Image (cartoon, rainbow, N blue to C red; front, top):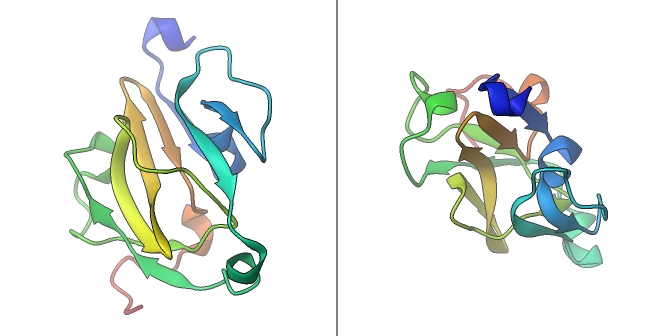
Length: 121
Protein backbone atom coordinates (compact mmCIF):
# COMPACT_ATOMS: atom_id res chain seq x y z
CA UNK A 1 0.00 0.00 0.00
CA UNK A 2 2.76 2.47 0.90
CA UNK A 3 4.69 1.46 -2.19
CA UNK A 4 1.62 2.43 -4.23
CA UNK A 5 1.83 5.99 -2.89
CA UNK A 6 -1.19 5.80 -0.59
CA UNK A 7 -0.77 8.41 2.19
CA UNK A 8 -0.28 6.99 5.68
CA UNK A 9 -0.61 8.88 8.97
CA UNK A 10 0.72 7.54 12.27
CA UNK A 11 -0.63 9.29 15.38
CA UNK A 12 1.19 9.22 18.75
CA UNK A 13 2.23 5.57 19.15
CA UNK A 14 1.70 5.32 15.39
CA UNK A 15 4.57 7.76 14.86
CA UNK A 16 6.78 5.72 17.17
CA UNK A 17 5.89 2.54 15.27
CA UNK A 18 7.21 4.08 12.03
CA UNK A 19 10.74 4.34 13.40
CA UNK A 20 13.76 2.07 13.48
CA UNK A 21 12.97 1.48 17.16
CA UNK A 22 11.34 3.07 20.18
CA UNK A 23 11.00 2.44 23.89
CA UNK A 24 7.24 2.59 23.30
CA UNK A 25 7.20 0.47 20.12
CA UNK A 26 10.33 -1.73 20.33
CA UNK A 27 9.88 -3.61 17.06
CA UNK A 28 11.07 -1.79 13.95
CA UNK A 29 8.52 -0.96 11.28
CA UNK A 30 8.45 -2.95 8.05
CA UNK A 31 9.64 0.26 6.35
CA UNK A 32 11.52 1.99 9.18
CA UNK A 33 12.16 5.70 9.14
CA UNK A 34 15.31 7.04 10.78
CA UNK A 35 14.95 7.74 14.46
CA UNK A 36 14.50 6.28 17.91
CA UNK A 37 11.70 7.12 20.30
CA UNK A 38 12.65 7.85 23.90
CA UNK A 39 10.56 8.07 27.04
CA UNK A 40 10.72 11.44 28.73
CA UNK A 41 12.52 11.28 32.08
CA UNK A 42 10.03 10.44 34.82
CA UNK A 43 10.26 13.92 36.35
CA UNK A 44 9.23 15.46 33.01
CA UNK A 45 6.69 12.84 31.96
CA UNK A 46 4.68 13.50 35.13
CA UNK A 47 4.29 17.14 34.08
CA UNK A 48 3.93 16.37 30.39
CA UNK A 49 0.24 17.23 30.09
CA UNK A 50 -0.13 20.60 28.46
CA UNK A 51 0.31 22.47 25.22
CA UNK A 52 3.47 23.47 23.41
CA UNK A 53 3.86 25.69 20.36
CA UNK A 54 5.12 23.81 17.35
CA UNK A 55 7.43 25.20 14.69
CA UNK A 56 7.67 23.98 11.11
CA UNK A 57 11.27 23.15 10.26
CA UNK A 58 10.56 22.67 6.55
CA UNK A 59 7.62 22.67 4.18
CA UNK A 60 5.24 19.80 4.91
CA UNK A 61 2.10 18.87 2.97
CA UNK A 62 0.37 17.82 6.19
CA UNK A 63 0.76 21.34 7.63
CA UNK A 64 -0.15 23.28 4.46
CA UNK A 65 -2.83 25.85 5.24
CA UNK A 66 -2.26 25.81 9.01
CA UNK A 67 -0.83 28.71 11.03
CA UNK A 68 2.95 28.98 11.27
CA UNK A 69 3.10 27.63 14.84
CA UNK A 70 0.47 24.93 15.39
CA UNK A 71 -0.18 23.57 18.87
CA UNK A 72 0.50 20.04 20.07
CA UNK A 73 0.19 18.18 23.33
CA UNK A 74 3.41 17.50 25.24
CA UNK A 75 4.33 13.87 24.74
CA UNK A 76 5.34 11.17 27.18
CA UNK A 77 7.68 9.86 24.49
CA UNK A 78 9.71 11.92 22.07
CA UNK A 79 11.72 11.48 18.90
CA UNK A 80 14.84 13.62 18.46
CA UNK A 81 14.95 15.87 15.42
CA UNK A 82 16.09 13.95 12.32
CA UNK A 83 16.12 14.10 8.53
CA UNK A 84 12.38 13.28 8.38
CA UNK A 85 11.34 15.96 10.90
CA UNK A 86 8.88 18.46 9.40
CA UNK A 87 7.91 20.33 12.60
CA UNK A 88 9.34 20.49 16.10
CA UNK A 89 8.28 21.36 19.61
CA UNK A 90 10.48 21.84 22.63
CA UNK A 91 9.77 20.47 26.07
CA UNK A 92 13.10 20.22 27.87
CA UNK A 93 14.58 19.05 24.55
CA UNK A 94 13.57 19.73 20.93
CA UNK A 95 11.53 16.84 19.57
CA UNK A 96 9.81 15.81 16.35
CA UNK A 97 6.18 16.89 16.45
CA UNK A 98 5.51 16.06 12.78
CA UNK A 99 7.47 13.91 10.37
CA UNK A 100 7.13 13.46 6.64
CA UNK A 101 8.90 10.98 4.37
CA UNK A 102 7.28 10.75 0.95
CA UNK A 103 3.71 9.63 1.50
CA UNK A 104 4.31 8.67 5.17
CA UNK A 105 3.42 11.18 7.88
CA UNK A 106 3.52 10.98 11.65
CA UNK A 107 2.41 13.28 14.45
CA UNK A 108 3.57 12.85 18.04
CA UNK A 109 0.41 14.50 19.33
CA UNK A 110 -3.29 13.67 19.07
CA UNK A 111 -4.81 16.21 16.65
CA UNK A 112 -8.27 15.57 18.07
CA UNK A 113 -7.06 16.54 21.56
CA UNK A 114 -4.87 19.49 20.66
CA UNK A 115 -7.55 22.18 20.70
CA UNK A 116 -7.97 25.06 18.29
CA UNK A 117 -4.93 25.78 16.15
CA UNK A 118 -5.10 29.44 17.13
CA UNK A 119 -5.24 29.01 20.91
CA UNK A 120 -2.54 30.52 23.11
CA UNK A 121 -0.18 28.19 24.92
